[in-house]
Image 1 (cartoon, rainbow, N blue to C red):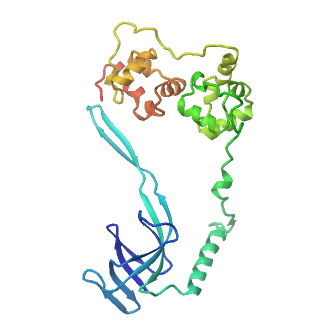
Image 2: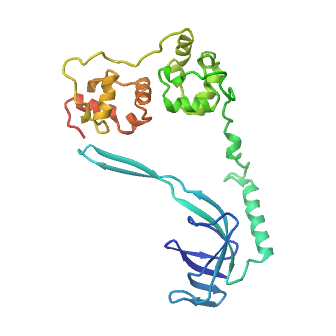
Image 3: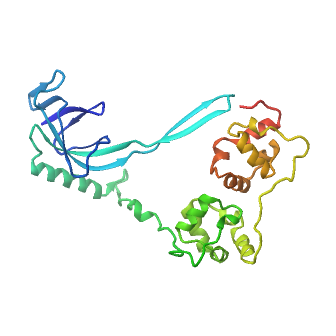
Length: 306
């Protein structure tokens, strides 16, 4: 027995025992839902087609769970208009299990057989073209190392980790999440600690490149903390940094406060500069995403802005 029903503007062909994702429904997990917008019901040679609905036909389902789908990125870009928008969207959904079609449920034997078959397919080793049997891959959560954990809570008042050049508000929050609250902890990082944190926070070499450990030691000794400053003032007339697509008046002002006034400065950025300026502006990934370096090099060479 099968049926075609409509919900959320879409049509679904289902049989008892099937699982599917539909639009987000206002129901709790475990609730039963009946759909009466049934377009077709079939079983063997007996097929009923509605005009548009099949009279009296009902598809019953149980709510398994609610969730959100994968992120869809939406990017809008207009050449030479200094306009670019990048947004993301994750669609809410409800997972259903079809329990019956017009009161007909899936036979218990067939349900058990299908569940056993699915389990066997997951656990059975695969045969390679050379005749060798491949072992099943380890589960995803087995391959991922556990997040490092240093302290459950700060020992007294936490230090302002943002005073370390290269740590912004986002990184400070991530460090607090793994139990790093004090300069003394960073100053005593071992090679294993550095490797674990670099891996967990997904920024290889950042701790060494930005010299977190020497900076933490300086702050422990009462130092003021390093300040990101490239130039005290423009060398000649400053360039109009707003010609770089992605830099508006607010970002231009922030860049000037950091001592960045010229296209050639941005064109010469190395990875350390990218990390530090991204953190100072609180826009992780902005420089790479909007291709500031390539744009600045083009403008420094006398090219037209995008």
